[in-house]
Length: 505
Image 1 (tube, rainbow, N blue to C red):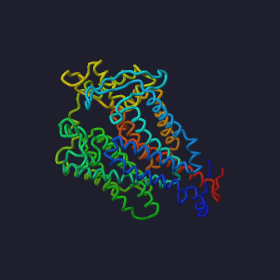
Image 2: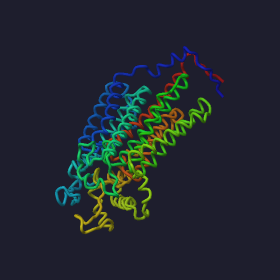
Image 3: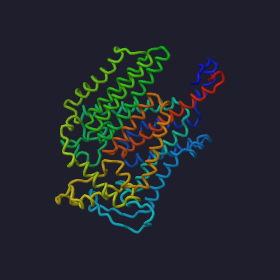
Image 4: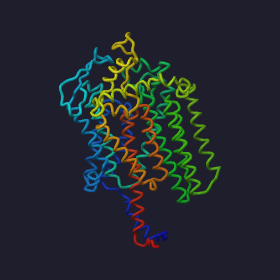
């Protein structure tokens, strides 16, 4: 076994240039733009509106242009599978948009029922759907994906310091806490409008229906999307608590500020409870438990076991999560109420959507139907398979679906197996890279990575990746955790080979 001799103080000082005290100009600009925009985007009415998605694409292009201003960053982009796989995915969508093979027209203007017809196209190329851009079509789907992928590439190319990732985590947690506070205010001062001023089309008709749980959660009109954003913010907050406490223990000082952050985590968790999302509640609780266990394990490893230090953190989070929810909601949270109404899985709407989507994939497995086409294609299959039929409704269906409630099935249905492959390969590369560098992740980055894994799992039975604010944050946190592990490994290698650091058998 190699016998490593500890480096001298001079050697350690010489090793520090592996992470410069000041970042490059490109890094500073990218971090400022990305962190600032990640805070703004959710407030553009949840990142759901077409103009918010268009702005997201423009900001992504701006951030990437900033990153490409330096030769080293351009070299990273040329060598990175993230860039080329993302470009391949966007290129596929561009061909779909330029080569429409279907056109969708509403039966009646403003109605949620369409007549879909085939139009001449190049059959051997991927085809898309021509429809109203402001509703959904292949061009809008392309614009939707440009922002998250370009922002992720800009971050990966420009960031060279670990503290940049910490800035992103801080912005994420701070914004999640603000969303939670505004959410509680909207519950305490109920309104039919989002943020008390914006009226979403159709929202007033169903917002207080007993079986529908669309309530205003900050700027989000859909509780499940808000819950995903909040549990990602919760993972960022818990990661910051561990980071602050570990640094304080190493430096022999008090970590009082970590308790303030922990209090904020309790408020975020309380809002997840109040959101009315069953999956959000279960997955948020899982992240909370994982964070608490990791926090305790790190504290025991670094300072020894002390039950007195563990109990206050656990009690604070649990009591505040339950207490604040009870005070503001004034009734059992809707997420808990809905757990008592789980229907037979064979008649669950999601299961019917999944089986129908699987049949759609079977009929066009390789090229797909086109980005943004699900809402137009699914009614034909609903009628064909005899589900959701009701002649009293326009189009003969009592139910419509914009999403398959399984993002992975919907991606294959819309983009085809060949089109979805670059996106899947991109995610597999990033998670594989994280596993390869697992020893350098550290508990904080590991918890951030876990938060993104939870989103991947959540996408198996809902559509979290169809919200621009969520998917953008998902990619930024995923890339930041992988880059943090790489920077840790680079810094360790620099220390290992620094003058004065000897290793011998």
